[in-house]
Each structure stands twice: as C-alpha cells, then as structure tokens.
Amino acid sequence: MLARVWSASIVGIDAIKVGVEVDVSGGLPGIVVLGLPDSAVQESKERVKATLKNAGFSFPMRKIVINLTPADLRKEGPSFDLPISVGILAASEQVSADLLGDYLFTGEVSLDGSLRAVAGILPIAATAQKMGIAGLVVPFDNAQEAAVVEGLTVYGCKNLSEVADLLNNPLRHKPAQLDETVVASHGAAVHSRSVDLQDVKGQAHARRALEIAAAGGHNLIFVGPPGSGKTMLARRLPGILPPLSFAEALEVTRIHSVAGLLKNRGSLVRDRPFRSPHHSASGPSLVGGGSFPRPGEISLSHRGILFLDELTEFKRDVLEFLRQPLEDGYVTISRTRQSIMFPAQFTLVASTNPCPCGYYGDTIQQCTCSPRQRENYWAKLSGPLMDRIDLQVAVNRLKPEEITQQPTGETSICVAKRVQQARDRAVTRFQEEPNLRCNAQMQSRHLQKWCRLDDASRNLLEAAIKKLGLSARASDRILKVARTIADLAGEDKLQANHVAEAIQYRTIDRMQ
Image 1 (cartoon, rainbow, N blue to C red):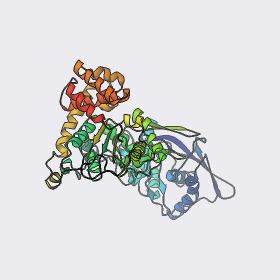
Image 2 (cartoon, rainbow, N blue to C red):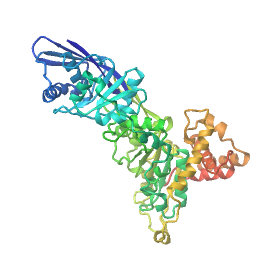
Image 3 (spheres, helix red, strand yellow):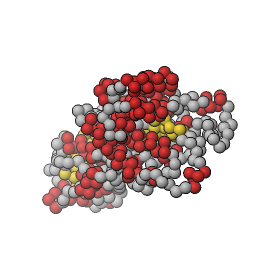
Image 4 (tube, helix red, strand yellow):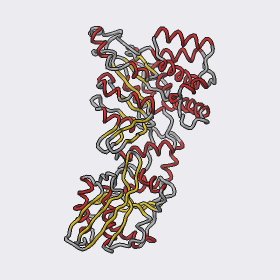
C-alpha cells in the first residue's frame, strides 16, 4: 500500500514543502530511502524501526520504499523521522490516512517512541500556512514556536502514540494555544536590566556615543587602554535599545530557529540579539556557510548587536567579510547547487587598544611600542572598514578621583526613553519609506531630502573633509550621525552644532 505524508526541509531561513511517499509491498524485508537523503535521514531507517516496535506498533516485515520529493532537493536532519514513521503506519494500515493530506509532520523520534524538538519550526509553520496546509503536527516542545503563525492549527505531541491517536480520533485532541503574554510583552521594553549605564563611572563622552548609536543604529568603536571600560560600555548598549516590534521578533526568531537556538526556549525571541564571537572566529563562522548553509554570527545579530572585542586581534581577511553586509544589510552564501541570502541588519560595536602594548596616548603609563609596530597594528583595519564605522570614540583611563567616587550617571531606563523618542521621530519621517527603520540605513537620496545643510554647516563639513581626508562615504555617515543628534535634540533641521558633534566622532580613522 502507498501512503503520502507532507513534511518540509529548511533552505536558508525558509522552508520548502517535501512529500514523504512510503510504499509497503511484497519482497525481501528491507528499507530503501530515495531523494538525496543525508546521513541523518539514512539513519532514520533503523531509528524508526526500533521506535515503532518499542512504541507498541508492528513493523511490517516487507519491502519498504521511502521517496522524498522533490528528488533533486537535498534532505538533511532528523526532522523526517516523524513523517517517515507516520507514513509506514499509514501504509501498513495501522493508522487512518484520511487526514494525511491536510497536515504537515516534522519531528525527531527517540527509540522509546517519544518526540524530540527539532530546529526550524517557525519557518516550516510559515510555509505550511502559505501553502494552505490545515494543521501542523510537531513535538510538544516545538508547539508554542509553531503556534506563533496565525491561521494554522498546531498539535504538539509528546510521543508517537499520541500522533497515531490524533490521526485515528482527531476530535479527542485540542490544538496548542499560543500564550498571549508572549505576544503582549512586545508592547513594552523587555530588556534585561542586569547591566545598567548607571554603573559606569565618568566616561561622559563614551556614554553620549552609546546613546547616539542606539538612537540611530550607528556602528561604533571604542579605542582606549586596558581597563578604561570599553567592554563594560559596549555590553550596556542593549539595555537602551528600543524593544523588538512583533514583526522584528518574528524575523529574529526565524533565524534563531533555523540555527537551532530555540529548543526548549518557548516561542518568540523577545530581546535584541547581542553576539560576541571570540577573535579566533573564522570567516564562515561570521557570515555563515557549510555544505548546507547556516546563518553565521552576523545573521544571528540581525536587529541587534554584533560586538567584536579586541577588534585588531581578528584576522584582517575575516574582518573584510563584514564590509558587504554592513553596507547592504544581507549576506549571500553561494554553493554549487544553490545560493542563499541571509538577513544581516545589525549594529557593529567594536573595541580595541590603541597599540600592541595598549598604552599609546595614555597619560599615566608610557607606551613601549615603536611607530612601525603601531602602524602594523592598525594596518589590520582597512580604510573601507573604518569608513563604515560611524562613531569612533577614544576612551581614556579614569582619573583616581573618578574611580573612588560613586556612579552618578543616568540609568539605562532614562536614556532608553530619549532613544525611543528619537527613533519615533525617525519612524514618522520614514513613513513613506517602509524599508527604512533608522537613520543609519539612509541612502544618498535620503540624505539629500532629510539632511540639508545651511551655509555654516556646509562650510564646517567641507573643512572637516579637507583636514581629515574623509571619503564620500565617511562624509555621508557624518550627516547620518548629525541627523540622529538632531533627533535626540528634537530638531527638524540640521544645525552647525549637530554637524560639529558628528565630526568629532570621525577622528580615529587611523592611530599610529
């Protein structure tokens, strides 16, 4: 007998509908899997055989042919365990096949018959909803994640016996209900306040740069001696960022779901991502890759922060991978059979010492590096990469009296309110530009419309370009930062003081 079960395969951060055809016929007992299965899918033959026996079902001792369609699409992972099990049960007439055409099945089976969570449920659920699938049958731990998609009936089952009972007696089972508190929580800030800007002593200039970066989505680098607070400042940026909107949360959750980071974590990602890879990270680990491309750190940072501590310790060729995503907001991974695009709209925050010993320009400890050593040190950062970093801030060592005093700065909550107001002004300004979410994403045509300069501001910018040797890209980014400073001040037009403040953040393109 022939049975057809619907499942899905992940490609990039999307899913493609896959048919699992199971034919049980006469012949020597055995299982054959067709349709470009990988090792995990091939192993499901033995896994499913043991599972069915241990769950109390009879395994047909006949020839079983399993065909995964479309045949030219590579199938990978253990998520086909459940549809293969259901297909064998239906083909051997142990469960009813009436509902198989209306439901999509995905999940991993254990040898005792229980179902284990798998990665990529959210994009699979979205694909099922678009294709008119009535329901989705998934492991219990994946049910809340799938239930986020509206218009789709989701059943979360703990074991294979529950799946069989669902097919035989569907009226006895109730679909999973989305916990409404998960969705409602996106209306207010949900960031963890375990680290607060109030804990920072001094560093008013760096705190101001953090506020501007949060308000406009600008890239930021801190340069200073060891112990000056660069990493501490960077880790407090997520606390002043606006909360994710529901649409943004869905985007982030899809990426993390594909990467397998949502198992047993509930439904939506509620906080903006903060990723901090080690400086030994390779290029593919940052941009993504593999035989079956998976998102890298820059895509996992989508709508959030990518923090590169000790930037100059990263290999130069690895850092060059960042140039295209920083400009375009996405990264394309090309393989022989396919080309996949991952979103990568993130804010880059970096920190580094000014020289190999770390004390160049320090007022207390003398630098021991030669000019050639400092030159080689900064040569790891190319000009085009530094051009893409809007805010370049020197962080000085704290004075003795600042170290011993109690922190007196504003809390993250107070700063976050100003950031939200500035973002709201930008959203209102960009209401006819649906692809724009913050000032850092503006293009040249947007600058001509919303960053017009008066004579005083123009003369100031031209003088800075000439004196600092700034590129056209760097001058555009000065205008974007000035636009954010004006938003924080509640001003509609750029003024000379806004441009002047923005220029002072472009003074560390090179330190030698």
